Image 1 (cartoon, rainbow, N blue to C red):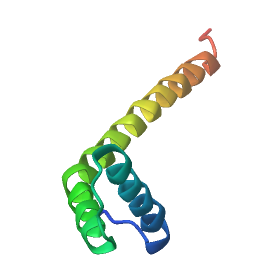
Image 2 (cartoon, rainbow, N blue to C red):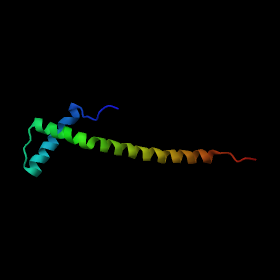
Image 3 (cartoon, one colour):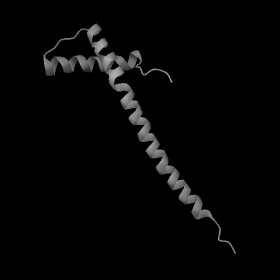
Length: 81
């Protein structure tokens, strides 16, 4: 499995949001370099947790669909004479 990361295009708006939030809410000005380090720390600390939750959500959705498919197959059975 490849490591969790964001592309440059995905990182840019997240970094801007992070910098804006820290400025607005905490009155803390972070430069680009510091914001990138903070974002990398957040990805490392939280990324796998969110990824795993997404997998669990997918697993639950797939199992629900499989149950429905199984019911449909049972409904297709022909009565035995």
